Amino acid sequence: MLDLSLTHRAGDFALKADLTIGPGVTAITGPSGAGKTTLLSLIAGLSRPSEGHIRLHGKMLVDTHTKQFLPAHRRHIGQVFQEARLFPHLNVRHNLLYGRLFAGKDRTGPTVQAIIDLLDIAPLLRRRPRDLSGGERQRVAIGRALLSNPALLLLDEPLSALDPVRKAELLPYLRRLRDGIALPMLYVTHQREEVAELATGWVRVEHGLVTAGQ
Amino acid sequence: MGSFTTEEMTAIWLSVKVACWATAVSLGPGILVAWLLARRSFPGRILLDGLVHLPLVLPPVVTGYLLLLLFGRNGPLGRILAEMGIVLSFNWTGAVLACSVMAFPLLVRAIRLSMEAVDTRLEDAAAGLGAPPWAVFLTVTLPLSLPGILSGAILCFAKALGEFGATITFVAAIPGVTQTLPAAIYGLTQVPGGDAAALRLTLVAALIAIIAVTASELLARRVRRRVEGRDA
Image 1 (cartoon, one colour):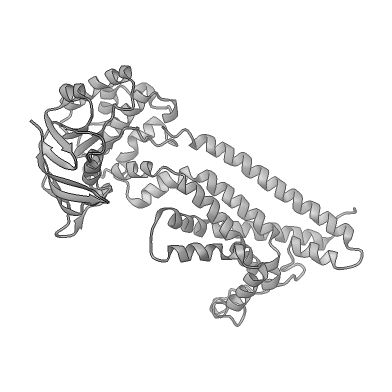
Image 2 (cartoon, rainbow over the protein chains, first blue to last red; image 1 turned 135 degrees about the vertical axis):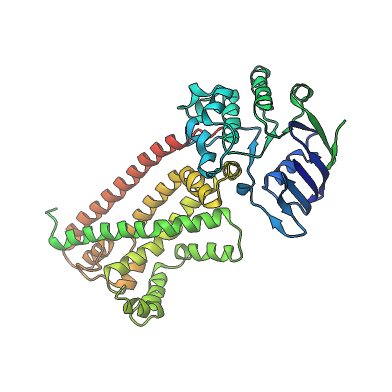
């Protein structure tokens, strides 16, 4: 359960959000520049809100009143971006296992083998990111995020850099992810078909105003 | 041309020893300062940047003289070090210090440039996977800027090998103790009949420099091939 109430100002842009997000896949839609990515970076801890708080499963991530701020690396929030952002100097296996180094002993969640099977990445394990197709990279990036033991997964237009064929190829994996792993996800997208395909909840961002969609 | 005298051989080995030590000693602080300048904003950042670049723009003699004032037997830092049994002035270790200071701006510049070229989004991704800042540095920033660190180190070595002004001002040119290759060449050009020996040593200096630069280029190319291929 993610619960947030905040305002964020950067230059002459202001973002205002007041909402609660439950389990399942929550789609975040809205025109470019409306503040979708800003919202995610606030949740991930890559930037600080001007005012307000964010709470995840009862744990305070940031609260400007009590001056609490949990840095990104201690939030347990997995992220998947438009570009996969795989580490170019590590092979696929080491990219996947990267988050495990820091996940601690009280790890729960799926095993490495389960993730490899879920996303069909077994044949790619020894390859370098530069030798993968766009769709394969995105699958590895999703697997890498899942294996860091996250309590929440943020996906920022994970399909937008892919051509329609690759997109259609990746969608079933995302559906398997939603049905196979009980992990709340925030999914930023422009595409109606992705919302229809995946989402169980909906949030709209327009002119910096975040509202629960109908 | 004739063969090398003992004194010439001593100067050659001393220079190589001093340059190796200067590179080894500067590398750690160089990486730290480059990272501070490339990735952190803090009060005094511009001052640090200026301080690092100072030896590049000051006359080497001035740098050497400042070192003498600070680290000489009666200098404030020299006295503290002397109590610990470390004597820098008129000693080969002083030559290491002078060469390190003179080469430091080049080292920091090369490393800083390659660190700035590392995609900060990869560092964000690492933080998102739970890596604390020190781990992000060790597992992402450092390996991805390795080509720059290597070429910076070689540049530092080459500069240290050729350093003359600051070294001779700080530690003089005592044969067998502080007389490095450039100092020996300079000395030989000042005495009658020293031309053949000066030429011999000049060729040695050129040879070492060419080997160092070629080795660094080959090494950097290999490392770059290992590291490159960042995803679009």
